Image: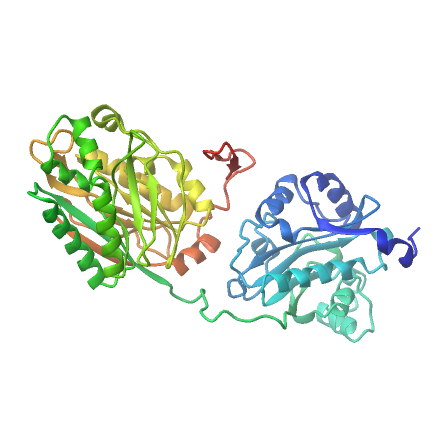
Length: 517
């Protein structure tokens, strides 16, 4: 028998749902919606992984008596609001968009024994507060009409909704939603066909956040171009450090003339400096690493001078007597980031004694989050998966191969990473020769800019391609808005359709912590 309102209000606890609530949640769903299938464990755990703040519980004396589930989406992506499966990602909410502007409610339920005690109102108020805290514009619901089945032979769905709006009929869901400030925007047929009580119908309802302040620079627009440049660098003997500086500045200047946002140099293009040193390969490599302070100073200055973000290929660095192959990102505002190569080829280990790094990063830039994967690293999907999960959308791959076989390995894997993770990938390699320089004497490259393979992009997934063996600068615009839409509604949804119930990437950080992707 329901408790008196005053007796139990102080004993109610509003909190986020937890994994251990799964059995109680399913039992609650079966009591509330006996004709519908409850959440699977995979769906519920996915809710908690992607948007834990949006999964709410009301608890009375340790008993789960009400709950709600929601996600954040971009309003313009779902203009019609007609398909629960699409908007909820078939109940998994992997399409939750932290940068969206709309809180979308996919479920709210109250134990039948406790209806009439204003529990739904508490959940709606919690959603509104969440909407205000996150600066969202609105809450959207696809509201069930569980009372309609009893009237469907006498009334059309439109007539039933109009009767509820006029308070001539009572619907346990719609009446509560109207009382909580939601406005009916349209009637949706076949919203959830399995909902027999509603005969498949639902209402599209909205609540507007009056505190919402639109961003001054809206990030969502029809086109959001990022201009990238890839340097296919000619390896040639030089006589001085100044020769190296002249060649590098020429390419930065050229990319800046095209108003590029990023320019990418190849892996170990600094091996050109072996022209200036003598000794066996291992000793010579450490001599190249001795140029690192001058190298950092040069490219930091060029990035600011030419107002361009530079991924300066990679170079050897000597850190605590450990030789590493490191890529540096020089921001045009003056900052410097670094990414060490993780996977060392047999030749690098044998000839130079290089050791691998142990972490990957996603770098925030003035044109969005990017990642760097040095040559051999792109042939391993797991680190790129981790970077994609952290928000990376453009991957820069500096590489250095001596023949077409090596080049094809890098290129084919780069294209696979585009498809697997809904990414753009930019590659840049070295061409030309360095006579008498061991393990760096010949070079083969055909630098490229790659996209997912879908109707929104180039037919073959290749946005731009350099002529092999020719020194050049490749320039192209990448539409990150098209990429975002593709990730959401592409022909195939590789990221969303991963079987994380069967497999995951378990990433181990240097500090011993782990995260799963």
